Image (cartoon, rainbow, N blue to C red; front, side):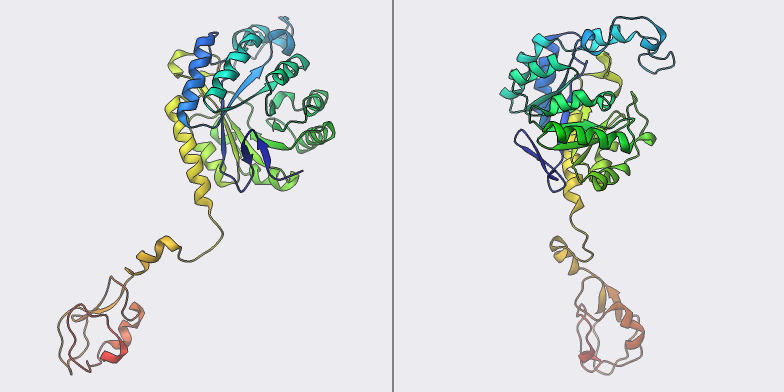
Length: 350
């Protein structure tokens, strides 16, 4: 598969600026108006893409209150909560997708989603989604991956919790299903995720192992981790976004506010630009700086026949004179002619 994948108008790959994807998730807090405000804020931030999650409580789980269907009591955000009730709060109703897609496209945003069953795929195909995301927990659902891949669209596959063998199986399923390219996302599937669990060094490992573009789906606070990931080759960065964390919501604790999202767009592109090439030596922008390296200069007016001393010859800026390391070789010699203060020292003068 190609090492560059096209998502909407954006090329995703090692030679391209990182694509910033803003995840709405449940941060609409049950309000379509708020969801549309988030879309407006994402567009104003400069992020290039917006992502939803397309499911209902009944398409992702069942209404069951057994222990297996409850989040562990010690969870930082959702401890003890019933899965069905959590997804009831967090889901984006199917009927909202049309208005959200329309608003995003009015702003020029590339908008796509994570489907969780065939009804979601059908809806998103009707909306002409340009790509699909496979969530970390769904990476092992190979029939779902094959179904999504059968649309012929690119797949972005999040790899939280997955082993290399599981990732390989998912990539094979995507290829077999007909996906038009795959992007893998390094991910720590904990909410929020501690930075020390990010293991960003896996980004180049995944890229080397699969020959695919690799990005980061990040749930840590702030933007430091995703910016760092770009230095290790991440070419897509996904972060949850909200209008204000103080407003609360299922994902607010690990979501960026609009100003932070804007900073993420700027700083990830700056980090990518800074990668440059593996060349050691002066760059074109350093040419002016080369003029101001240190060299030996005459720092006092001298007459022919006077000795060279530390009082009349020093290593100073700018360049143009003998190398500073020649100082011990010229000390004690005599000047061959008169030299004015500020003149670069040369062998002809002594």
